Amino acid sequence: MKHEPESTLLELLRYNTWANQALLTICLGLTPEQVSTPIPGAYGTVHRTFGHLLYAEADYIGRITGQQPQPPFRWEDGPSLELLLAFAGQVGQAFLDVVEGVAPTQNVHEEEGDLTMDYHARLLFMQAIIHGIEHRINITTYLNTLGVALPELDGWGYLFAHRGRFDLKEGGG
Image 1 (cartoon, rainbow, N blue to C red):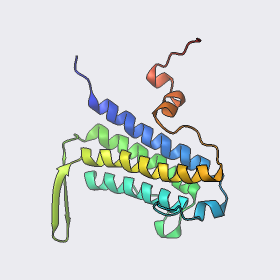
Image 2 (image 1 turned 180 degrees about the vertical axis):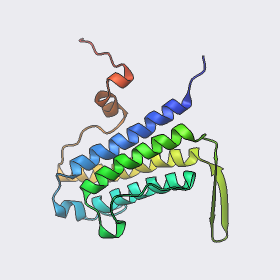
Image 3 (image 1 turned 90 degrees about the vertical axis):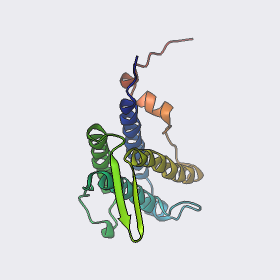
Image 4 (image 1 turned 90 degrees about the horizontal axis):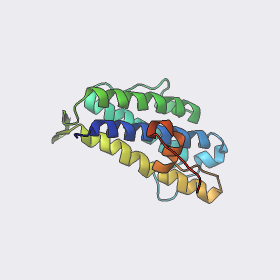
């Protein structure tokens, strides 16, 4: 029986969007000082890290399709976490649309200065997931130092948040 790896890729991207939105939702309850405090060893503040993460995901889509999702705000205005949360859903849906319409081996061509690169679109699918996990870990590590209660944002947390999608059956011991 042949398996469909694309369905797994779709699920990984659904997970990525779910985790981004879940963590952003928690961060909405932080104080302005907590959101704007630099995270040692990470990209920057909670706010800056989420902006970077979502901008990058939109950029990956643009590299594949030639059209980057546009947020309902200007980046230079420092959008609120609420606006970033809404954009996370927009970018997540755009990624699902791309994966459903683009072969993983579709060529991505880039030119920047003297550098020219050609590679498969699947590299950017992988990068979105890996990059998201990396920066969410930066944020959750910081939030743990603040004593913020966090849900599980890993695969197990995703399973329990989406029981029907995985046909989860639970029983007593």
